[in-house]
Length: 222
Image (tube, rainbow, N blue to C red; front, side, top):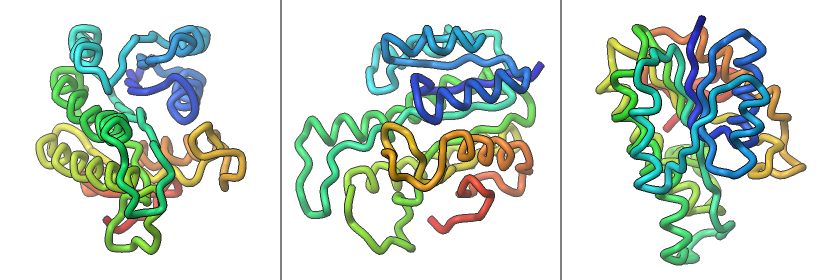
């Protein structure tokens, strides 16, 4: 049975990933930081871990809780949007810390703890955003979120170099998704986004290691 780890599955994309993976017969371990998150995951038949990637003590407890697993797929989903600044509006220190600790430091805390828990030829996905792309950027709204996702893409790229030959690492733009973060006017539903990304990750080969894709499998520029 395939083993899947989902970091950040309290709601939205992470929770839907847990639902689809369980429906496919996969063994799922998923983390949540909200009070309601573990119960929702356990109702799906997933093993729920209480982890907050933005908290040092909480995040450091991941490794011992996944000891003995050999994950075929890992999804790092946990994320925060922060203030909807239009650019050149300085975020507060608290806003900066919340977004950067979740979106950048979170993956940097999680990734080293996965080294002994990856199955041979594992797949690792980071949920990023095309808002983090620099070369194709034409807007500056949400500039703190954009900065965090550009940094997260850099983290994923470095992970792909370190894990080359052991895992295929991919950064994903999930689309503009109707979740609490994306809002009700977004383009696609969460089921479509997750199904698309699962398909792309399943088809990925070692040649895709370190790549940036959207949920349809289209390669994106950094």
